[in-house]
Image (tube, rainbow, N blue to C red; front, side, top):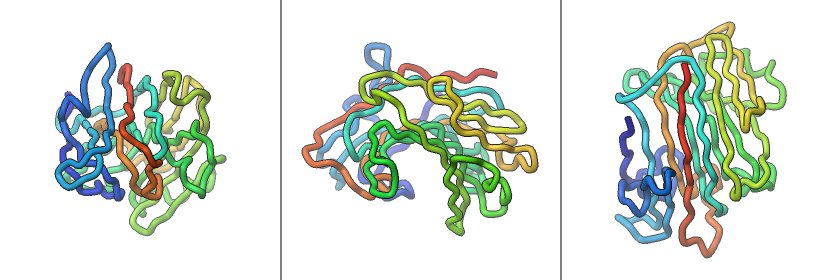
Length: 236
């Protein structure tokens, strides 16, 4: 059900890698999906990695989606597990909606917690949607960029690089619930206005290098790092 996203165009986030479908960057091995970012000169980029998505092959509305994975161990890596509205081609972003189930790497920035166990989830939507929702959500960060609105929540995990952890989204008509290792840490209400989160979404998995999330920072001495995914499951 997966497609490859290939190339190097910053992907809207100032990322530094070139995404490939080479076995060096993405492979199923030892029962795991392994996405490896490598420091190498390739097609004009200084790094390679991979990104896959299920657009036009698999999308769903409501249910539970979860991933069990182990994070890549290097400052400047930006692994993610996320979803986009299946009507992306029609509406475009952010109006199709975006659900970030896992992002990691922002801890390298001075503007947030300096903890390698920092992970986050976020809900992105157009400027006319959910205008009043953010004020009622405790322990979150709200942004209005003019182009989009998004609400983000953060938590920390222990042994982020040594252990596998499970990240989940429980998606119902009235709310979005984000979990890490079965612990709820972010709830986004949908009761007053469900759009765009009342339509099917597809899945994405990628390992970016640098970009806005890390202020373009990649720690010196980097050679390679691997994002290891045990499984992705959808329950309905």
